Image (cartoon, rainbow, N blue to C red):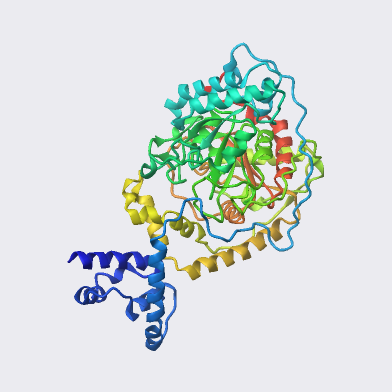
Length: 586
């Protein structure tokens, strides 16, 4: 094959995926004709094959009539491909999780946190490694410790334990100590920047920190450095928080394996931390950072939080800016806190839940945290069908039942809700991910990926026609309306965790084939696509010694109510206080 013909063939291969054309055409008669004539145009036979993928059939005259316009579209697509599009540019349309008739509290109210507890600096500062942010904040503000001292302890602990956890991609010692010194100076000058002033934290490594590597967990991006901070980094820095490390993410925000290996669960080092916010989950659970920021598209905050026994909040879509974070789905991605306690999540949200003028999907709906909210007046539901799924592990089912019993003892009247039926699998995520990683495939750099098979997902997603993608979004709207109707009667509701791989047999270290989707999974998929907020928090332990977890859920932008009830439950049970034995400080 001549060089020109080879180039023509490559252009055809590229164009097929965009047009929804089947690559199986190429070995056959059509490509033989192209080679013979040197033609570089799309003909009626190719369009006919593409129409089959879309489930359509036209007359021969209609196929011939489409040739001119399809080739014009092909020319326009070539110009689009030749244009460099920066990572931080998304489509100019914005998803909303609010459905018709949904009530949302738009009135801003003052933030109200719990009364600060009396705290005393221990003789060995490492003893505070598992203290919540609220207590660490009091140590700093009462001048019993400095931010520099706390930061030095956290940096040392990360280095001490990373060999077992493999949770750190890049240590940020210089940046952290610079920020800690500034935090101390601000406090000395009488400027209190809020609940995170002087508190160390870690960023999932798909979040940009200026002039430091942001590797997205992939061998294809190991040397990637951005010259700007993500909005969430700017917000936390302005609030006096101290960024100490870039924490591991599964490759391209998938799983718990990255170019540096697998990130491990502090409770069971022979298993992964789950993903893709594996590093934030592992580091927080092991007492190596007071809190971390994770990201979620399809379970990536809730799953490692459940696996590692962390209190992790997946906020409503549109709560937190995603500017400066790798995109996997512009209509699903969310950033949120992974902490030791519920009120720590509220403290972080009080800083990051606001518009930044960059991510235009972010709403101005206020985050009205009120630790004194009377949670007894909340209407609370639960999903009996999901809690009754027979294929869940006995220890998880037992602890879930204990959670429901505990809430009833607290005076909560649990209202049964039914999981809506919706059995159509939607395909938005794969298409949107293929768009973001288009340049990765076209450049051939997918060969540098740590797990090269993951690129197959981006390739096959190119075969989904644009019409079907948009039809899926319309079906998504229908599903969202069903879920909204099913949950409209309550302020908060409970669901069993489908994350953290609870279907492993007790003591097993490798997954088993999953049974057909059950009520738990169906609800999880629907709530995720509807972009509902969810909070994973520990509710006991399995026979293996690993934590179990339960989900507190709510309709969009109702995080304050969700957190208020979860805090009451957590205060009554104290499960968050237990430390992984290998990392405990006493």
